[in-house]
Length: 388
View 1 (tube, rainbow, N blue to C red):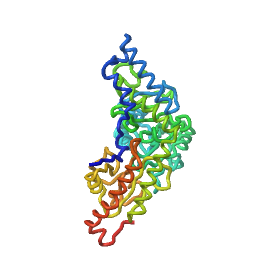
View 2: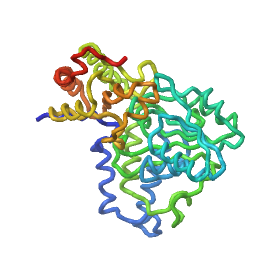
View 3: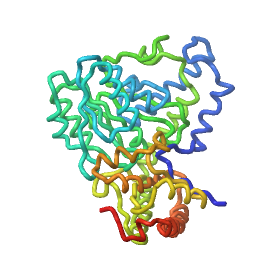
View 4: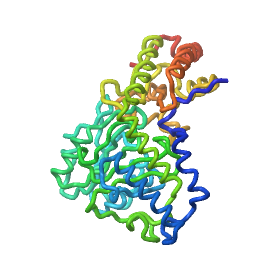
């Protein structure tokens, strides 16, 4: 059976060039990057080359990159590394749980957190962020691209709000890296998180940009790795892979590869909306990353549609992979004002570098009849009820 994967926001495949780059560091080049002999210095040089590559993707100095185990650790390091009890943090209602649950933990430890709401498009109003500022505000943390809808937040404007107030600004760019151009100077952020497995590197590696002069309290205590900001022997194969993935992402951004992906995404959206009634795009009208589409299908349970499509060879999702199996509807979609039943009937389609026009046509042959079949089994649909 043919299988097509359209769940790249959950994780991506490791590109052949990335796998090739990291292979040697599992065997022949195995040294500890902190050792001073040949084997250690060989891997140290590879780590620093990767650091330069990641810095090039983000528009910063190599010394401002801290390698981590992934986006969740990077988010946690940014949030807990800057705050202490009695301080105030501003976030949004549509953040990834790596940020939301970190903020909830801050509240338990004596910090105050304000969660700024979003509009019906999923966008934060920078003026709401400004109004939420307090004398004891320490940090603003608002994501760059939403993992469920792909909506891009106005991070440059939020960065200006933070700079005017002399408050630290962190942005979770896990779903933006490799999909849109990132320049930390233009954004005006002090910290920015990325994850390797969202951009064709393996799972288990990520990075945090930390602006020079930002005093960050480490979460892990041990050696003086990563300039004493993140203790632990470096994951050299993963770091090398992330560096190679960063180089490939820069090339893709420069050659127009992302515009082609956007065209495929638009073809998928427009055809579904034309051929399947009672559907719509979540976040339509807002700027979005080029690979992501969140579509609601009224009178259907999203998980049932995911399973039905998977049985026919198409892999999609209802939203964040880390929330898979959750009984509650998506916190992102409900924060946008969507009724729970419509949120539960929403699917996320996320394209990757491996996807072709033929993959999209395959998906479009499956989706309309599968939706029609599930609706035939829906008493709500037959009674003519459609949630508006």
